Length: 441
Image (spheres, one colour):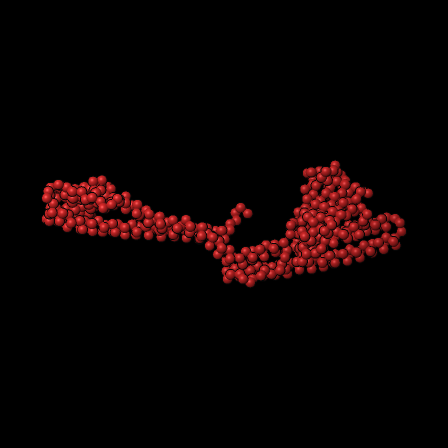
């Protein structure tokens, strides 16, 4: 599961990242355009200030008694002067300057037009045949700060936009993918044998063919399961009938023959036919367990265990306990459950200590069967779940009981746990079938 990824999460992250990236790209382009526009606006302001100051400076100099002395223009009020100016004569002497011009350190000897120094952007205008030169200046830091403020005004909304975009994308994907998630849940519910068609209503156009293919596959699987069940039923009938007829004829022959070697051979044949009958039944059970068709499409009540002690030849040796709620409500096929329980109980009766009861308990979450007897070595315990494997016992058997139970549990999604000795005891054998949560009422 670690390699899986969520389409909804990936789409949400990609869409949100795309929106954020596009916003940043747009903000970057807008910032570059804004910087160009700001440069043009401030250059125009420098040029306009110079052109306005030039005639005023000329009039001021004509009206001044001592034209040789420089004059500072006093500020109208307390303020920061972003654009300063300085008026010089042709020889570079300062004639007139704004209040903050000295702090700017405006260089002299600049040709008319715009110039950029390490820290200033200047514009120079000359008049009266070059005898009056006006230079306006602005700090480059002021322009950079203006561009930064304008850029931040474009970028800061992104901080609020990203969470809003994530929420909007998540909500949109949740609503859009709801039919797909319902389709996934419907398929998951059919993973344990429910072969009912998957609803196709409400699916998007891209998913409708998938639903049709899944329904077609389940329809073919349903047909295969029905054919398999029919084959198993017919095979059981065809095998049991001739074996039963042969056994009846052998028993009749035993009754007609006098005591002697011939009757002993007939008795041997009868025993072999009985073993063959039991073996054929076990093989058919194993074929059913290892095939499909272990789940019913509608839950069946757990009444099978209640009948096993009445059907067993050693009914008095079964100590049956059923939970007060009647045990789990399972969708396991009743016949498959009966085969599972019967094999486990017969195994316990056959290999347990004589005259000691086999304890059978059915709870809401498990079926537990235990019997007393010789403990099975640990190295042999796991091998007992294989076909034709037997423990250290002299009892008659085919070695298929636990293998059939294990196959049914694998096919139906159950868990079979075997232990020897019984947990908390010195001897015995226990088998626990645990039902998944879907089984529980």
